[in-house]
Amino acid sequence: MVRILDGKSLADAVRAKVKGRVAAMEAKPGLAVILVGDDPASHLYVGLKEKACADAGIRFEKKLYPAGTSEEVLLADIAALNARSDMDGILVQLPLPSQDADRIVAAVDPRKDVDGFHPENVAALEAGRPSLAPPVHLGIMKLLEATKEPLAGKSAVLVCSSLFARPLVALLKARGVSSVTASPDDLALADKTKRADIVMTAVGRPGLITGAMLKPGAIVIDVGTTKLDGKTVGDADRASVDPVAGWISPVPGGVGPLTVAYLLLNVARAATKNSRTGAGVERA
Image (cartoon, rainbow, N blue to C red; front, top):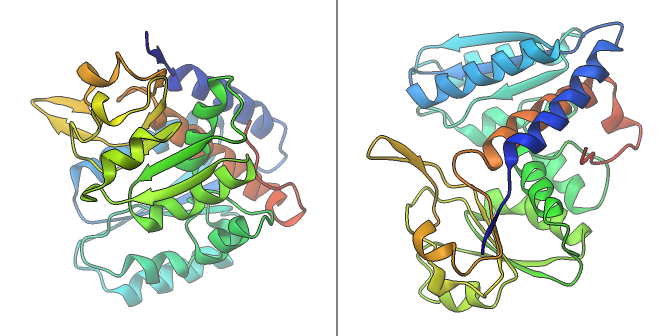
């Protein structure tokens, strides 16, 4: 019978650690979030982050912009945030309405890039150097560790974009897991996933991963999120996956809560300059 990976309980433990860490700081950490446009989901996610920061004792500053705001305005404001000593983390809420996300994210000071997707941070992660890793990827690793199964020697198939996969490939490699990235439209996808010990999917396509595509006992980490008939569902077809998989992260309640928890931890780490003093990636 499949075992459920309870991301909420794991996230609560991480958030308690962050709260204690922040309470011991003389100067409280600060997070600035840049939110462009009126996308309801983005506003909802930013609201959750604001609430989590308040609970942890982290100062939160929200920068709201109309959808048509020029890239030059955003770049200038990011430069100002980079220069502020009272702002330890900067997060650009994605997706952006029309602006070049790569250009905007690359403008953030890598030491303040608490979302972990700055090119310098990704390159450092791949090279095994201390860096701020994406919270969602740290959450995925936490779920894998929660299975208590030895990870070294396992194989993983990552069904997602190559951009999303890059930091995760590095984190998995550090734990001895070999991985390949696959497109959801890959005609050989089922052949690849059937041979994998771990299947991670982050596509937003309900029913993409079925039980027939899995090795018995496989660990399934579902990062996909889609609203379907008023409910939030992942990429895994639970009816067919649950009888085959050994572990699965639910949607909601899996990676999501951990992503917020590790964002808070990244802000605390940035504030204490751990990313510059060799502390490396914290798993909590």
